[in-house]
Amino acid sequence: MTPSLPPRTFPALALAWLVLVLGLIAVPSARAADAAQGFVQSLSDKATAILQDKSLNADGRDQAFRVLILNNTDLDKIADFALGRYGQQMRDIGRYDEYKKLFRDYVVRIYAARLSTGQDQSLRITKSVPRGDTEVVVLSLLDPPKGNAGNPLEVNWRLLKEADTFKIKDVQIAGAWMALEQQSQFQTIIANNNRDPATLIDYLQKQLKTPVPPAPDKQKG
Image 1: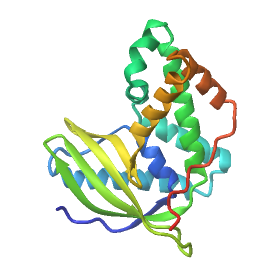
Image 2 (image 1 turned 135 degrees about the horizontal axis):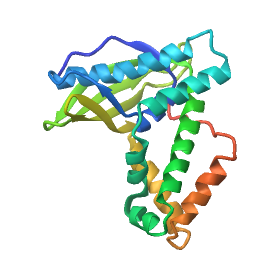
Image 3 (image 1 turned 90 degrees about the horizontal axis):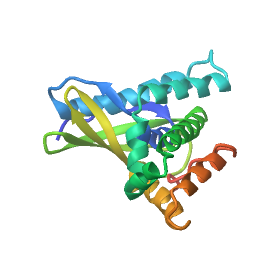
Image 4 (image 1 turned 45 degrees about the horizontal axis):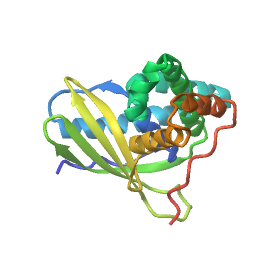
């Protein structure tokens, strides 16, 4: 077991929802488990810096988070994973590129908005668990805001090591893996509409025209 890192403050549960779409950041190739903890910590530091920047108004924070997401995300791979078995069908009807663009807009809009309205909470990284030579799971606890009742929320980060980088493969929040839930949601939408992948495009277009819903609160004790 690798040493725990000291607590830091970072935006509320929104950051945990964001990690599903965060991408590559360069890290040393040695001591992968320690580097994995540092990778997770770096996400909190970047988000906190934006949240606490008093020179930014609400629109400025939202834009800063949009840039953070776009600069550190491989949305094409995530979009393909979310389609699952319907990926080839989307290509067959000639709308895969359209879907990818809508997915990018959908993800950036939702997570930038949720991050912009985050609170400060304490993230406690507890340990890292290597999974073979290329994967590390970083375990952490997200404490409720000071003065708020509630229990710490388990947030586990699955990192994939590729050459000298880490890539977040998935994040588990209160027992649920977010990438799998996104895939399940999209596949259900398609399956319930005569297995027509074009209905997912319709869904994304509609979502982009409606207000961003708040993130589910999984931290109430």
